[in-house]
Image (cartoon, rainbow, N blue to C red):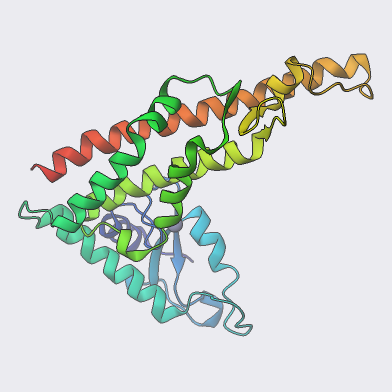
Length: 252
Ligand SMILES: [Zn+2]
């Protein structure tokens, strides 16, 4: 047995299909988690249900009450997260009278500032398969870190949902940037480059690689570089949506 259709629908509507922990919009990529595990007598009720994204749901598996170690989620904490989020959705989507508080407006401006100017131009225009100044994206890393602070949560649920989507794309991009680019060295200090660029410019000699394997390696470098470029474009497009929809909410 699992949650009934009725319970599932109620929970999905109440959460706006957003994760109750990280507030990301999930669409169909959503799990309905038993707050009190079924093995411990948890029921298939609306009260015992919390909608979560795949990532947050994966964290729940570690929360065995018989082995309390680390900062796991307790049942009462989960209930609080869920109830607060349901309230935000209810307020945001059904009862919003049309005023966005100053704190939300300031946070919106701050996020916009990070992406406007040189950082945004790099994401939008630059071919990152080549080289770039290493600290070009520091402001994005910084913002990602700042999002861990509850003071940097929007009070308005719709804005918070938009932020959740942006945050996902930021995570993906910073992960790609840190995992697929490397310092060039003394020739171009403070610059990073992809494997592809390093290879094409003679920094990787690959004497040990058999000629027939070389093609495979080149293909791998191409794909890696493409992934970085794609994640930059995705982040930029997501930021544009954030601005378009966010401005409408703020000025409604
Ligand atoms: Zn989540």
